[in-house]
Image (cartoon, rainbow, N blue to C red; front, top):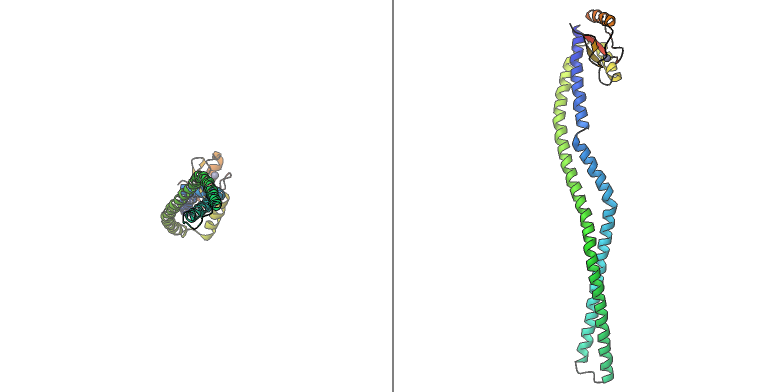
Length: 240
Ligand SMILES: [Zn+2]
């Protein structure tokens, strides 16, 4: 009988250990972390694309700026030459003026294109910024979740170690055979290896056992025999 009572103590510790391990595996922060990973995976491609388009836009603007400056420089250079006094041919001066006009018109066209690109660039920057913001938020959320998980796991580990020490102490009084039988039952019955028989009810599965059976189990249990619940297979421990 003492052995069977000790079995219930081992069962209590095992149940506590199961709960701790379950809590560790199902911390809400793990779902948060999984969510951020999914978010990062989801935005990776659109983010890379938005960044490439934005960078290409910046390069196009830089190219146009360079062309605008170059057209302006050319017009200024011709202008200087016209008024330097070295050219006297009216025809040549006329051609030069036409060239300046043409260069200024070209410059104006380039400037208009640049303006359009600059406006478009604002949208591209905003698109990229929105995705980049989502990435930063997801990374920060993930980092915070990891810190929380580590801290909670460390706390649970301490509780788990204490439970394991207590479990070993409780199990030490049992015969290896009974402990092995209990472990087998526990594996089969989803965590319940031993259960109190309270009245006619197995506290492992809450099944009501026929009264004649209960009597037999009670007598057997008091004689030190090991009886199982027909339903869950747990070793039944009758109340003294
Ligand atoms: Zn049962």
